[in-house]
Image: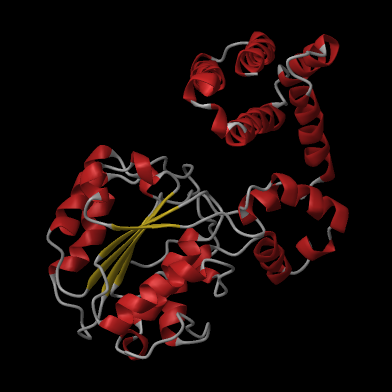
Length: 354
């Protein structure tokens, strides 16, 4: 399946960083890589894998790393294989980068064109076209590989079309399904996949990934990098997004307000609500919601030993925030009352959970 345009960015690609299929180094996830190596060494590589974990930790990078290996007959037939490394200048690697390998199909949202923006989903017709490759034997007798990036973009119809092939896979076929929320995938797909959950990265691995990108990322002051790592949640992508002194300072401001609960600094909360109501405040608004969700998650983790009944108020508020945020987006409502309500509800939940 040839690439539409070598210069067109993928819909979810992070600007200034290589796409996962162009990334040849894998930082962390040694256990995940070893799971595939064991399958290749034994000659019993499972035909479908659900690679789950938070966004930006290297799931797609691992999937393309596996794809390059199994599409290289010398590697895939090596019973003593010890690494998934494939040289970037090899024929197979160049074909995968260009999406031109005859035994590779990639299910993804379509990139933007001159006439329209990127697609919002992976439609069923695209799935059927891509999976047509599995109707015949690979030209070299090797593997045929399908990378799904990501499963959240599949519609119900396209997920069912994928399921039909996974249920009765042809010999030497491999499905690598990337998912940011594996629990939401169709149970019928989950049940046919070997599930591989990748953990958030260690700080040293994130630093290594940033260093591999070179300038301008490596030119950012170390104190800004350290602050971004604090809020990056083990994700390279999230850390890169936060390599901005203003963003980190804003997160610090919101976090201080949250840490003060159940006491509320009414003046500062009102000022925050007013600032987030502006039309040009979309980024800060999203950053506020992410900070609130992370803060609640940390409180739940810290107090896990208190029991479900004591933690229920915080869980309920978290769910209420999610519902209200969706309504704000759908109906384009005023954000000010929502922000004020968030802090009031969280203050009450903190009191009740104390």
